[in-house]
Length: 425
Image (cartoon, rainbow, N blue to C red; front, side):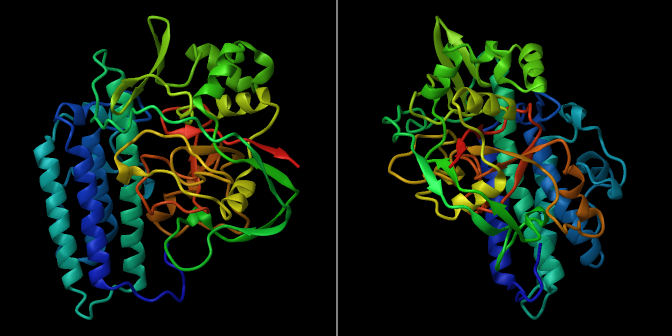
């Protein structure tokens, strides 16, 4: 999204960023075999190969097709195969069937990426004054942030796929990723003064349309936990019968527990009586100090009730995040697994794990989606989902900010979602 009054982005800056983001997607896919990259383990996830193609389709559809004179599609069938949910762009292959696309082969998808990259360089060369007009630079920034979202999805999706393999193969291995964390800092409730605040994105720089318009909210005094809930604390909830007590659960959440046979976070399992968890680096014990991850909104809400507290609203979270302490890890560490925080004050408000809020994903007052197909990016999903804030250890660095709104359905667990508690003052 480009804001009025912003200076046109220079060709050099945009192209450097383009090369960096596009190269990172390929690097994330590199540890995976062609067989790894075609599998789809559930309808919510997508194959790695599809992510590689869809992110190229985005640039082809919204920049090259309409703005590069004489551009020819790489393959006339690709708009059908690799459109995700843009109704205005026509029919598309069904999402649950993406894992059936053994053709085109991975090599052809990589050729497609190269074709799009060459054309994007040609488009840049056509801007002889060295600047992109705001409409084009806005689309390019949207495309780059879109690709960064798919970099995170690629890691989420392949983790789920590999976890379904009885061999439990690792995506990669980092000794630091599975090292046992030191004891976490004590969980303290930090006072935050209430009042009239403005929330939503403000100032220069990119944001998604769902972060706007900036608007006022009234907050009563509240307290926010200094860190997210740890594995050890969540294990106490399990041992205390948290998954067996319907009094702690929303009705739909209790039904999800029964239907799914939930008894622990996703990727936790028993091995000779001991808890283990599957990570992108293979199986490892869930370190007591590390943040609990891969829990649904229902589980987060039930834990908060059990703990005698609640989840923060997204406005509370955003206001508190402005005074955050040290950030946590992002994907550039290649750790791809959350670690404990240390120190005092609000720790790791950004990074490590996404944090569920109590807020439904709905439009801000005065929100209007953009015109055309690109307006389908966020607006049409503003129902029946909940907001998460803060980013995670698989989020690209620099991609999130305090106003960033992520959103998922309350029963979904394969994203890197965790829990930060709040309470009334």
